[in-house]
Image 1 (cartoon, rainbow, N blue to C red):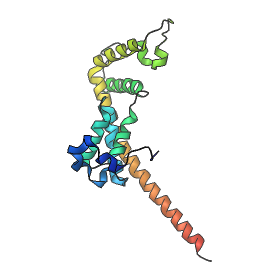
Image 2 (image 1 turned 180 degrees about the vertical axis):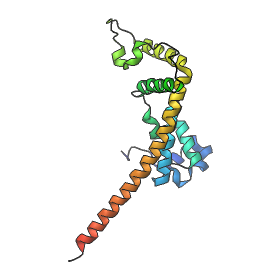
Image 3 (image 1 turned 30 degrees about the horizontal axis):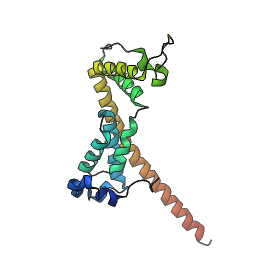
Image 4 (image 1 turned 180 degrees about the horizontal axis):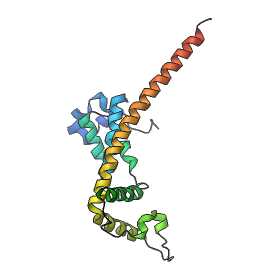
Length: 192
């Protein structure tokens, strides 16, 4: 996979980044170091939940500003993607409703409780187009308002904290396992 990804030098030589090249020289933006990766994971997950469009750009810009690994930050935004977007937004809306202790502000169309494929055939057996499904979903999102934003904010904060802690713990565990393996190799080499 690494052979298909552009190298750091190729990215820095891009004519599109010429005016911002000086911002991208910091090695922390490209290296896989514990704190840089943990910050990047938190940034990516937070932006993935909070910003519905241009997530990669927002994650990269935030990673540069916070001196975190750019590629991990961008990958972290994939917590919301075309497959997870409908259930995540629906669940965030439900959490927001629970937090606000209210009843739904807008009626939930039946198609939102199903995936796009399931929504294409309603219970009546009548076909609806994917554009109609998208239109209904967008109408619902516009009316969801405060509960949706509240739920997404909760997901973003909890997700970012969880991502940061999990990377730190995973890195610590990895280092302990490497140390144990190294000690075992040394013990196996010494004559007894």
